[in-house]
Image (cartoon, rainbow, N blue to C red; front, side, top):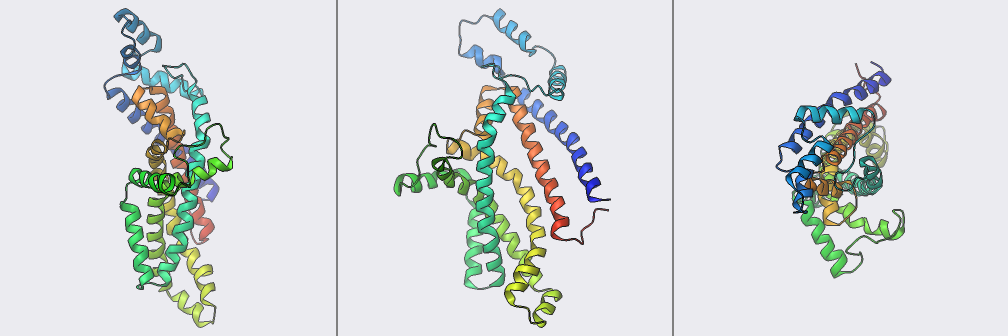
Length: 318
């Protein structure tokens, strides 16, 4: 199977995956007590039972669950994700408005994770068994164990209140690319990327240590190649295959972590919007964000599969 056919096959596999995600999410949302009409009626005691029934009929919430799902899915297939019940705003517009903030936060997290994990993993593997290796493993274990919401609060306490280098809240009325906004994103980026950095560093260290003990490394050293060339040109490239695999699977962790991190730092991204939608039982918005997140995760895993062939030409999809 050629790489092009493999990519096409993976793209087609997205359809049943997203269908399953939509069914499960739709069922869970409706199994939770309450719906958008209950939320609206709860804040307005003057709404009568007849008015409530009329609202349910208007939005199709009085229909059987399976019929509601088919109606929603039919609209999605035409590109219509519906409206927010409480405000009447278009769901697609809200996602497009919040998406840049979430993407930039994710980029900050990945940059931090890779910038820390890869050099630390290489250094720990080259100095295996020494003090630096022990320290790196300690910090890796700590990074995996610390909850990101607690880490975010501690970073706010230290960075914003004690040393006063970062603002407590994101700067208002500033474009996303403004230096003040990018500076504010340092703390959320560290928070969301710490666990990923720890996991990648551990895998990088293990993979590098295994590669350093293989025969081709001994042969390269016997030929008189500098140690730097052996490590960075030969060993590193083969070790990155495992790292790419883990990095793709950690995409889901970063996306899930962004929900908590955005709430802690009051960052106006999709994660915070999802929490607000769940609290308000905004079904259309919950489903749209869930599907969009699923697409990102599947695409990230597909990109990882494609990168296998770039990192190691011996890999073929048969």
